[in-house]
Amino acid sequence: MMQGSLTELDAVLMVARHGKFRTAALELGLSTTALSNAVGKLERTLGVRLFNRTTRSVSLTEAGQQFVAQVAPALRDIHEAMEVVRSQKATPSGTLRINAFPTAAREIFSWLVLPFLRMYPKVHIDIVTEGRLVDIVAGGFDLGVRSADLVPVDMIALPLGGGRRNVVVATPRYLKAHGIPVMPQDLAGHSCLRVRLPNGTIYRWPFEKDGQSVHIAVEGPITLDEASLARAAALASIGLTLAMESDVRDDIEAGRLVRVLEDWTPALPPLSLYYPSRRNPTAAFKAFVDFARRQA
Image (cartoon, rainbow, N blue to C red):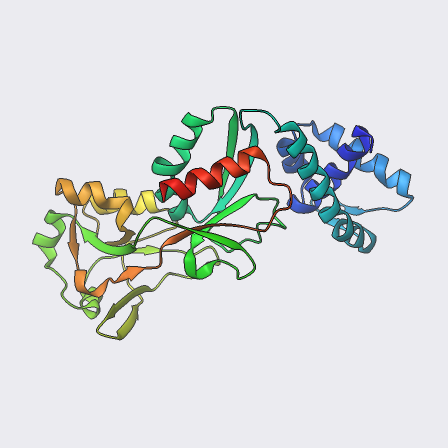
C-alpha cells in the first residue's frame, strides 16, 4: 500500500477517535489543513462523505462508521507489521501508548516508567491518564494500567507490585483543633476534602472493618478532582482527605500528615499492567512487558 494511502487512512481514524480535526492533527504531527486535505482526498477517492462537518463539531456519517469499523483492525495490523520490521534491530525504539488511572500512573511512574526510559532511551512513552475505564484497543493504546479487579477478562494481565490502600489523613494542627475521628460516622463533624469523579458525582469515602462496609458522603469547604490539590489542601490544615497511601507516604513519614481510621481502610487490589494478545509485538512492547515483569 502506498504511504499516501496509509496517511489518509490514519487521518480518518484519528479524526474519528478525537472528533476534532485540530486534536487529531496535533497527534499525527500534521497541520490542520494537511489533515483536512488527506481526509478530503480519501472521501473523493471513495466517492462518499465520511464525516458530517459543522463549524462546531465533526461526526462520522453512517458510511463513515461502517468504514472505520472495518478498516481500523486491518490498519492496526498493518502498522504492527511495519513496526515489527522496523524494530528488528538491537535497540527497542518507537512509541508506546499507555492508558491509566491517574493514581495508577503516579504509582508506577518512578519505579517502572522512568527506569525503563533510562534503560531504553530510544523508546518514547505516551501516557494518557483518565478516571474512566477505557477500551485500550479502540483508543489506540498499547497497554493499560488499572486495579486488577477492573481489567477486562479478555486481556492479558501482569500484576504490578503488592498491596495498596486508601488512607485518611490530616495535619497534626487540624487534628489538635478538631479531634481525631475513630469511626467513619465521626466524619460528619469534620471538614473533609471532597472529590468529584469524572462522571460528575461526588465520591463517597469507602470503609470496611470486620466484614462491615460503609460509604460516607463527606462534607467540607472544597470539592476537587485532582489528588495533588487535595494533598495541598490537607497540608494547609483545611481538613481531612482520603488519599492513596503512595501519594502521601512521604508526608506521613515526615510527620506532616497523620493517619486516622487506620483499621477502617483495608488493602486494595494490586495494580495490573494489561494488554490484548498481539501476533506481532514490537521490540519496544516486548522490552517494556519484560522489564515490568522483572520489576514487579
